[in-house]
Image 1 (spheres, rainbow, N blue to C red):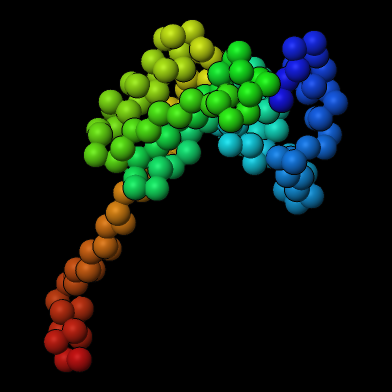
Image 2: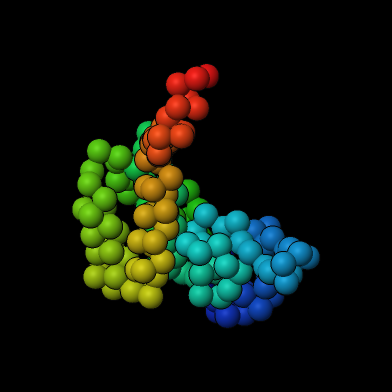
Length: 153
């Protein structure tokens, strides 16, 4: 969303109070959240706002399991169709390899090292939600009185 002659700080100050991604809650202390796909923590703040920053990272679930890492290309702010790079890490890849690749993609290449921990935490939460739910084990009867009562039924 940045223009070459307008700084990201000016864009944030203009769009901070009202933008398409802003979610305001009146309950629980009146928190403000963001629906921006390039916002890793869903907090409404300048640091995590993907539509303002020239470089932004987003982690979203993949349709077939796994995660997709979306990053903005810094030099393509006037080309929306080719302004994003997407890398998919499938569900068959181990979680450690996925986290390592996400960390190297965000921090080690110097893209946005401040977002490394948030990107890994988001990917971890997505991968945890994709795991199958274990069935709850049947409760064991304890004591002779409980076993007699169960046998009588």
